[in-house]
Image (cartoon, rainbow, N blue to C red; front, top):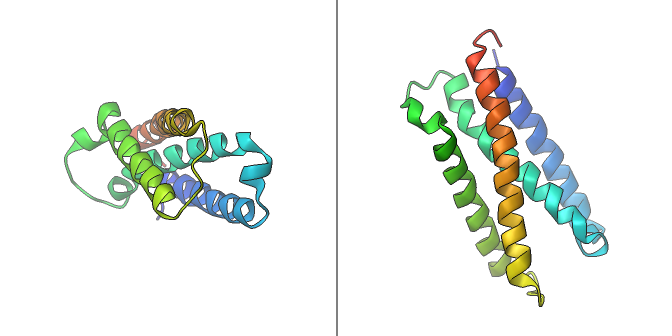
Length: 128
């Protein structure tokens, strides 16, 4: 049976996929410049929740992966990979590229913190 961490992660990933697809198709990222921030925050939360999924499915690995610093490091690595991916696919570099990248990373980390807090709380409640 799926636990709440896994369910929340799947629902959030589905919402992110739909929002990202629609935003690209309708050029919403360029029309609403602020839309990029909650999308990065949601992405960070998904990555943080995804760290708990293997443990919910019975993985008996080291518990140090479930510590705040480990989860935020994973979120940061995924966010950095995403930023490199954006460069590689040719998203135009604006004048405020450095500011935008730092904002994206911070939003991802903020979302990761929220995802970690939710995931840790649900993980500790072994009932769910």
